[in-house]
Image (cartoon, rainbow over all chains, first blue to last red; front, side, top):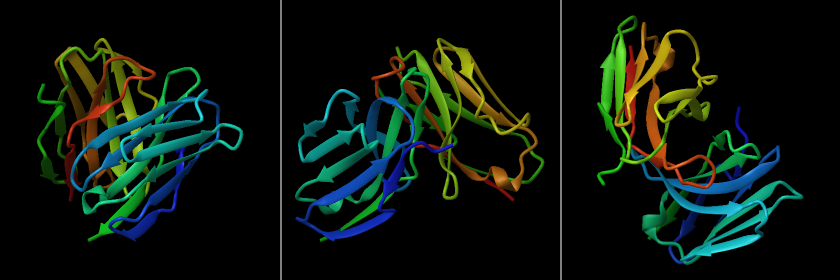
Length: 111
Length: 114
């Protein structure tokens, strides 16, 4: 069963704009991770945020986590055409036994 | 390291045939995962291994699916007999440990069963 659910399902923006994707989940987690998938390729890990953290940055990526609302957001600033991909959130349960992926947000960045 | 290596990249087979997918994890990674990706169901965990031992196979759809890890550098996922509804992209991933170690994915095997 899916734990994380991303929103929106698809997002289309122009280069230079910011892209925000959201993830909601249902049960207690230990950490939440974001992955990127380019067409025809495997997923690539972007960033991990622990349940006791509220915000994390990595380059042009900013991730927030609100455990009271069971939600996370991924912000990509100053987007580039190369950011075009699907983005997935994945939640690690409290028992460290499973990493469950959402269905992803498809991001299209037009030049 | 070359990363996680999967073969073949594409497999087209007829219903009823046996299919074997292969995976070589990153050296030194203790965990190996098999996932299946479809448009309808997204990315589903099928099974994962720790130090070559299957830990959780609750995601394996039915007895037609089996997975083995005979050593630390090789794993197979077998479907016998295959059915059209098995058509999907199958990913293998590995990680150093469970918890905060990121998963490293291979580029997948696209399986089409006609």
